[in-house]
Image (cartoon, rainbow, N blue to C red):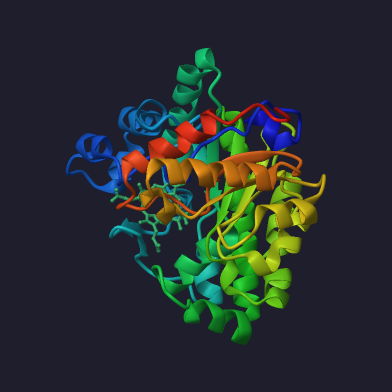
Length: 339
Ligand code: 1CP
């Protein structure tokens, strides 16, 4: 995994899945019980167990911290609830709202995240399984903070962008600083790779993406300790901003299924490795069809600097566990590169 991220030679692409820990697994539902999602994120032993489940249950080759992109937002003093997606108590829409955000004390307000990472790293070290940390990207966090919750068009966010750009600028600056501090703290606690999720950046036209999103990615790529932990950048629905993703400086570009890996490999060249990009819904296919799709992805990405097999977005609650197993099984059965 680490070699693939850095573009060093590997036998075959490693495999893991976004949202691999979670609602499609009966074992997750059993372990979670009736407690709230945030309580599960704060419960160190439970979060460690939930993070490790996909390793044994579905054959993933990397572990991602069980948490949510909204956990560091708590350190800004913002009230957040999950129903099941994040809902913000008091949306951030004015200059005063931004000014009122607390100066984050990550170790003091969300110490459990770093304790979970330290325990995971200790558990995974003997087996040499890589540990991923993650953060939501500033634009995606801003999308929920302004809107108050998920949305189809994020019209409130876009209104701010076009009508009151200084407010959004100030908010993105605060969130960029938070994200850099948060990812570096995760690396210090044992994360060996970090992934930045920009789930909603693809809603912008290319010109606005260049103006509003690319600078946040570049600042993060510059200030995160990438020599200690390579940075993966995920943008959903970002086929129109692939060149901007390459310009971000991230080590790995995580692509959704709308992008052709062969084309992405040409555009990224030696500047970045690729991650992805099976449509999560394709995991409903019969195992042999999944295996054929995995071989197709590996072939298409073979000219890339490096390739990490993954989905184009996270597992869905209705994703069949058998499909996930077929996916990891087919990846593990790939012939060595050049063989
Ligand atoms: O009720 C439950 O069990 C809670 C469901 C759940 C889970 C399992 C949420 C609420 N978050 C998570 C875990 C989670 N979320 C992880 C952990 C580990 C893993 O990947 O296995 C990660 C990396 C995330 C990231 C996340 N949360 C993103 C970015 C990636 C993506 O999938 O687009 C986003 C946008 C969120 C917000 C969020 N949190 C939870 C939900 C249901 C949502 C989506 C809401 C929406 O679509 O608006």
